[in-house]
Image 1: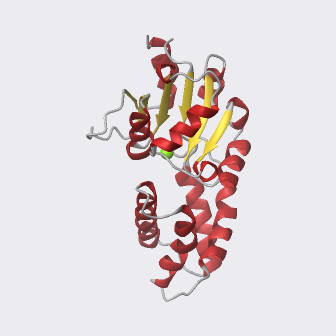
Image 2: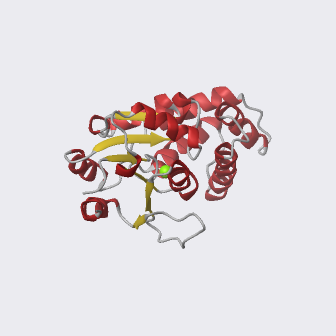
Length: 229
Ligand SMILES: [Mg+2]
């Protein structure tokens, strides 16, 4: 067993963000009187992903993103809305979504016996802490590192510098990050000089961002980790 410290992404790695987002959007759009058709939902998700990409690139602050995304989105439907107020409502609904992937809790419970587990997530502190608590995952992690609270986000090197500084007896050689996103988790791990495990359920093709290992399902993780030397 080579690694001692495991850094876990949350959304679409341990928790099903799409399920949480789906139920929150459904409730929000119902409140707004806009029917959430598949086309409208797709349009929202495309716009939202572009916003988060700009955030990852440091072109937009998290606050700017949250304050403006619904105002911009609903203006396309001739609705003038108070961006921050709608965001607050959406956030409340989103906080209530904590659908675990089938294997998450069992895998995390098992790994917590042999490794030190930490959460590394881009997101809003209150949201992520509530979802981790209500999903039952929180007790298995030694600490939860959230971009909002650190003031920097994955994949920035500074995010990882802060995380490493906060972990007792930290060693880069004995640390690996596990996540579904090449652009934030894997690129971030590479930038920070640690090994990376890409959770790639759809078996997406390789890119220029090269993870150390790849798995298709979280359930493959304990065996992979036990085999690393
Ligand atoms: Mg993720």
